[in-house]
Image (cartoon, rainbow, N blue to C red; front, side, top):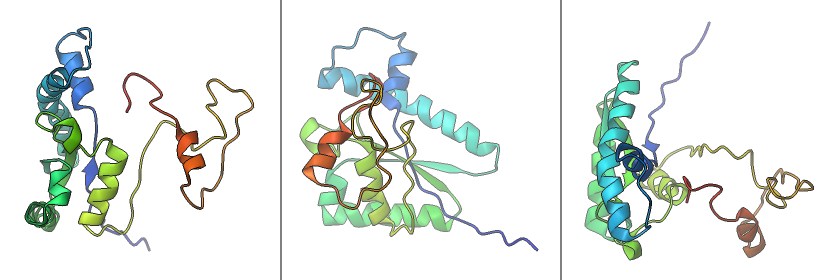
Length: 175
């Protein structure tokens, strides 16, 4: 006999800026705040359309929730975000969350979606946070540049050394 467990999923995503860049024909990127906001504004709808189409295959409604760092700093906004997410989950709607890059100023941004996902996991009191990546884990060095790099199987604590090993973006698509 199989027992099926039902999980409530909150998806934190990235990709709005890249989707906007693609939609506009891959124009040269000047990396100004205004340019990033434009690309995010164009791409966010495309990104959500893709998630909605995929979720429709499984009969799962989705809701777009755009957050900024201020939504986690201000108590009223924090509680409102939590209520919105709780209501989505109670109604069987999967929240798809992204940082509101179209309006967030650099100093108001969470900064990356791994951090945003950790904030959201805390907000909804998640039992589990799963971060998907194309990297198999943390290495002693960048394996693309150092053939002697080895995978670190367990990180007990994030120290300045561990943080430094993480490095920066692996491509123009990442943060």
